[in-house]
Length: 454
Length: 160
Image 1 (cartoon, rainbow over the protein chains, first blue to last red):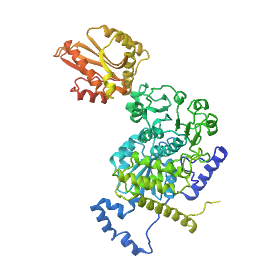
Image 2 (image 1 turned 90 degrees about the vertical axis):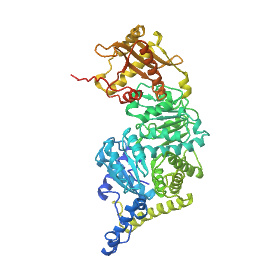
Image 3 (image 1 turned 120 degrees about the vertical axis):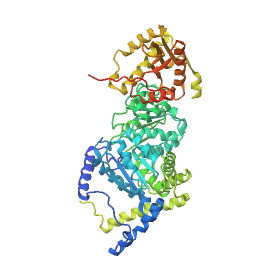
Image 4 (image 1 turned 45 degrees about the vertical axis):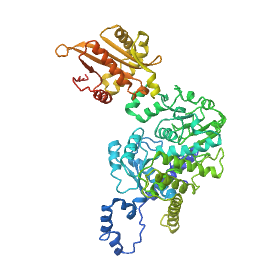
């Protein structure tokens, strides 16, 4: 998979090569002018066909749906179509670059959705960054979409927007920078703990960076069984704790971080990351690009057989070889050129495949835990090793398996509009994903998708 | 949480509590600052809080209660009685500072502290109880309204 637009896809530690990816992306984007387009999926050989695809025949379909809105899932493409909505307020490591600036990323995401999950995803960058308008706009999309993927919305606004939409909409709403990143980190952690003989509930976990990714990771770890008192979040002001001086500011402006401050850090440790790492088993960093953001000396204070995920892009907070030198046993980064890539793309296509196949009304945290557990199991069945804790993106069989597990969980929780057995969900997901990849291949071989320009 | 509640006691503040109380009062004033730039906290505020509270603990018209878990001060309320020159009842008890540390909130501790301070103010002759807080502080507004308070007098500020 060499889609340059994936957020966790950074080509190389060699800056010269990175420039090559940049220039290729510019050249190809100019050549194709858009990565996705809408093409018919029904036969049209003449104008007569429009008498049933469109008027007058379509009126019967519209009338039927107007009497029973759930029929939109049976008679239109709603069941397999999602919106990818972003306001461009926090795009990759680029900051606030606006809706138009976010569009190439959203298009890339749509491509990954189709290629890995068989999901029709429509990029919808917004011309507003105001939370209320974002909420109103997304709420109004429910008629036509089976789900919504929020993308590149800054923290803490993203928590408020996601929470509101999950609460009020009857389709799954997901913020990939929160749940996708947290989901893949949990999967990686499950296997890292197995390799080092630890249990999640007993492990001392430090989360460095308290933005969208790590706040969601903390919440997901707690849902999965981590002891909140053994979790420490560290941000630019140091270790988060219930008596920190900025607690009242957090209460007013960042209630999610405030709640975690009350729940976590049972030992009441104060100070910097260096203090937090003394005696820690796990470090999950989603902070700012390194190298040098995290120092080797700090990491060396962690427990034996330590686990470190340095997720910042394009450069991890600390180089993997420095972590090795510091005695860390299991190392993961966001990059494909190092072992153990912690990449959201392992999660979001499958989660939506499962949510759509079950026609779920939402995506709960426990559905995400189910996705992470299944993803971890896919790697475990192949044989875990310190440098193999997650499937790679080309291990196709993982996607339908994760999808089916998510769909089954939706059914179990009463969120599914369409309840099936695990094996039926699995077959359905396999077929849709295989069909999607076949369609793309046949478009390429028939020339309707042009080859890359030389 | 209930264990935590049982261990917290509400008592009259003593001179030895003043250092801890002042730190809580500065948290309160910094919280107020969040609501309005006209409430920007002075650099010498901590020292002033210590002086003010030292005076208040000695003053019979003043009530300072602390919530303590063991020796640790986790909440403070300061109130005083004052004369209403034109209105009746003639004496009001005014709650002027009130702060509970974040992790001791949502456990009814604040309500208990207010109930206790009201009863002490009444013993000092107060016929009406008032509470002062920044106009924009909706949390305080909701809290007091739940306890039966209603808006009586507003103070508006105008920057230069």
